[in-house]
Length: 108
Image 1 (cartoon, one colour):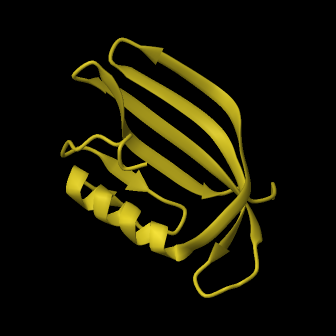
Image 2 (image 1 turned 60 degrees about the vertical axis):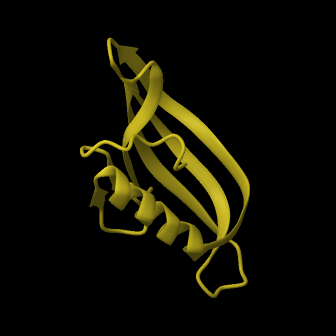
């Protein structure tokens, strides 16, 4: 994930574990922090809902489904996240400049 991210000042992550970070260095630190909370993931899949690009920007919206062990738990818990990624072309490569993810909840 870190390799896909931009290192620019406007890079942003709003991850499913809460909070947010802005700026390439802060995003990289947050990704390291989040990785320490996951102790294994299985049955991961992605359901693309929308995607597009124009000029120097692109986006994708998808459901990220998995079973993960978080923190000290030895049990795998099913998770479905609503995820939006925004990409920008930087030096000829697509780089992630924003990730927003939160748990999918049943319709009220």
